[in-house]
Length: 487
Ligand code: BG6
Image (cartoon, rainbow, N blue to C red):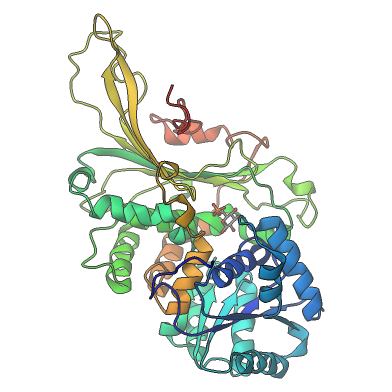
């Protein structure tokens, strides 16, 4: 029995998806498995996919790639029959075949629906290929009844983002454009909004009077795999910071929107971005893991950073003077995605020396942005027994403890579904993106030299000076509570 999907969750009409970059890493890891799940679970009333890429393939060749991708990356079990139904809706057009072949393939897919349908173009291509993909869709006259998802990074600096926006508008109306940042599709990211604005408890202390500093820390163990060519042009700042980490910063820092609609949410996020101080290169550590330069597809004297840590500020009434420390990188010691909020410490302590008060850092509120989200609030409490010894205790919530864990949609699935329904709430805006490039320009124009770090470490040593007198929360001194073991 297919699961019951509540009405209004999915799009009304079947969808023809033109997936540009269909054989790339993202398509194989996330987009094909995601589109399969949405179709197979009944979220979409029908879906046919036309893969497009530079590779010379036929439809069967693409089906083979899709099947391998599903086998390797789908997190859910599926049957031969499920695959067969999905495979029947796959087609392929190589970029070399030109706009008229693409148009014919889309019209054939639409005819197979035998009724009204919509088009979703997903441009899973690097920034330098985005414009030619947009032009192709224009020349193929596939703009009507369509929406277009643009992958990040959107441009590579302020000038290229402004140009891309204006050229994009020559083909698509703003209402058709969905600039994706998949971190905003993560359950845990949306839970920041719920946590802040659905409760009376935390919002009153969500400001510079109570919060000492914030860390947004996304170390990855992952290496580059087959993405060397993309990554070499992009680097950690453009790949992760100007996109994902700053969008999370927007949710963390924004004022309460007047409603949960796209415009009020973007307005509040954009106000945060407008208040950001330009990134000072002196507050940035760029790193490169040793061995990167000898990998395939990487220049032997590459200056691309595979790691970045920086301090930035939102210079408004709520946050003036509160440092936000951001860090991300490849081939680090652990894969984690956390936001950690350190509260100010009490002004005076009546507890005796040696009691342990303050010994384990300030009180922290920590969000784990994994699909199975977690949250923790840590504080000092008395250790049972004689005298007054204090220990760091914590209250923790784990999505795993609820019965809803099976309902989590992977971030791309959630966002693809929203785009098919025309809902812009969790997408980024041209204004927001351009402002983020604007604050980035001092760093992009005068990047500090890359410092080397060992694969498996936490980055170059200078990250500790950068955050002093504070310390990085990761690696955690105390791990998350194991939900299966309360002992
Ligand atoms: C992508 C970046 O956008 O996000 C990758 O291009 C990165 O380099 C990935 O690994 C991380 O996403 P997630 O959802 O796995 O945390």
